Image: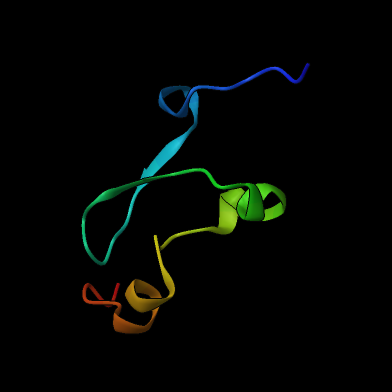
Length: 50
């Protein structure tokens, strides 16, 4: 039986565009260090323009 991981135990980051927290997703497994935005919409908007 696979070991289950609780969502609360996953790493989180704050999206610089919407300022909301988002959690690790399996599709980001290979490049979690490079992920900055929670969604494609936030990546396109880039409100803070830093």
